[in-house]
Image (cartoon, rainbow over all chains, first blue to last red; front, side):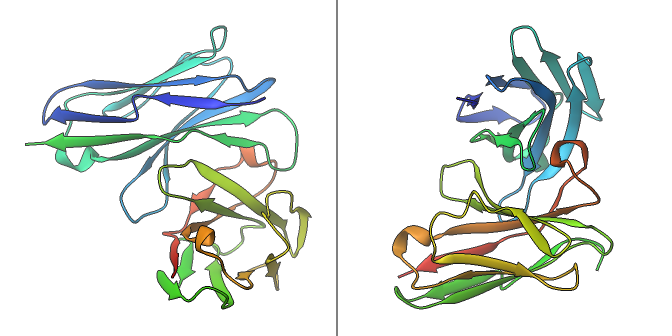
Length: 113
Length: 116
């Protein structure tokens, strides 16, 4: 069964600190992996996308890494800001099929002053 | 508008009533998706449109759920005889082309449905 699991479920950090969110998946064959940020009451917004050949991708203070051998990805947030408070969702794409996206349940990040 | 819009933003309905949720995709986006997000759950795929046709309806949870798309643009998700377990946020997304994994999906803000 193709699955995407994220950890931790929730995380609270102080403003200015760094944090790392984890995503493990079993989706195979794999096409790409995305990280989305979803603010409360809003739709998800794409942060990064990586194919199986890419190990890292950055978007400002967000850096995603991918190890396709171990089927693990992480999202590292540097110098967190209050506006980083949101849910972060890992989405893995299966190689074939009309609809082939597998969504993780997300990590709820809260940044406190 | 520049992005995907959905209406209404919130809907409270009584059990047994029918509801219609609307999605206006980004102009020119041929692919349109409906997802459901229940509290504490990941996004659940419901249906996908390419143009006006729906090649993949595999995610619709029951025959009470239906969707249509007209003119390759606006889509309506209809839930008949709503049940309390239908309470969730219904998200719509659109993209330029298929397959989904290769085209960036842009999400709307969602419709929060509460069935009392």
